[in-house]
Length: 77
Image 1 (cartoon, one colour):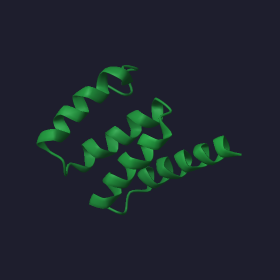
Image 2 (tube, helix red, strand yellow; image 1 turned 30 degrees about the vertical axis):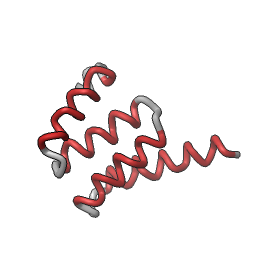
Image 3 (cartoon, one colour; image 1 turned 90 degrees about the horizontal axis):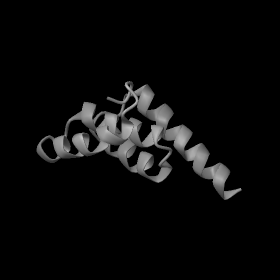
């Protein structure tokens, strides 16, 4: 869904799925990516941290987290 350009429609679906599978790394990571595409930096931090709490070694999530932190830092300057 994210790659098809329907990011806004994907988030509620992912959040509903997370209600039944809260420890799904794939769903948590997808939620972080959706927020990233929507430029919701604070939510990216929360979602990426949640996913990294499940599996620490995930370079893509670390990248997304770092980019969101950088965007938040730019905003505070």
